[in-house]
Amino acid sequence: MCDTVGKIGNKKRFSMFAKNSDRQYDEPQVMVYIEAKENTDRKLKATYIEIEQVKHTHAILISKPTWMWGAEMGVNDCGVCIGNEAISTKTAKENKEALIGMDLVRLGLERAASAKEALNIIIELLLKYGQGGNCGYKKEEYYDNSFLIMDRNELYILETVGKNYAIKREKSATISNCLSISNADIYNDVRNFKKKYTDSPKKNANVRKRTTYRKLLLAKDEEDLFKIMRAHSKKDACSICMHGEYESTNSMVVILKDKPEIHFTGCPNPCQSEYIKYIFGNELVYPIVNEENQDNCDFWKSKRYSKL
Image (cartoon, rainbow, N blue to C red; front, side, top):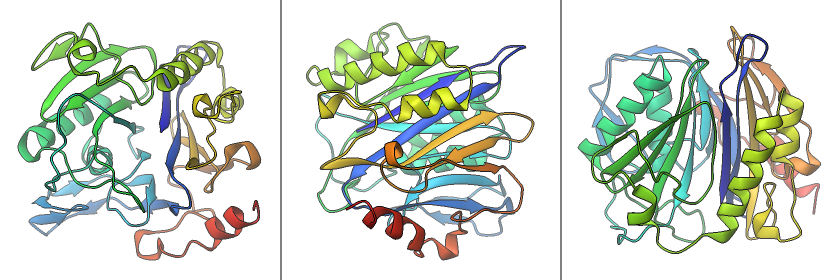
């Protein structure tokens, strides 16, 4: 359960990105800053598998469950933003371990200087290594992934099933836990990806997608995105801010200025939390941590349990 939104700006408005990370109840998720690096290692260990490393990786700010290598969402020093969604599809999920969707989010952010480059990198890695592995915290979960990939000037929706993919370029877009591309701009299998691979109608996800898109078209600034991410419905499964077995464990809003301006809750339940502001590249603000200190979740725990 997740919802991601993105909107390319114009002369009067900045481009904007936002996502709620909806995970299993009580899974710790933290904001992690990782500096740009010149890498000497030839290999990189992702969540489950080892892959080839690249020489240079960009500085990134990501929101990640502490137990996995990858990220639910994030932004890099070039203003590239990526968020992913779990997609239930017709094909059987292989339990063999490969790259999970969250690994692909982080790899795209670390390696790309633009949205288009991130798109191509994720596809290249998908074709080379595949996707698979348990993505659940307490309960095992296996799924395919869709991605919203954007920078200041371009926005792409990438939907994947195994090693098959479809791409749609948009100016404003929202994604949820359902396939949506029926007329792909680029694809390696079929143009109507939604028709071929949709497992069963995901009514709740489609309701959330329509809700976020309608609100996104009217959004002008971060405050409008806060309202979207905090939105509730009479039916819990249709809420953008989720509570229960799956809950919004962190919320992130990015305004793409010369230096990306990030607003995040750093803890569950956006409806009950304040957004903390951080300008990318400035001195870190609490509770952003580096990767070596990511298991120090005092802020997350104190906020989480103060609501019980």
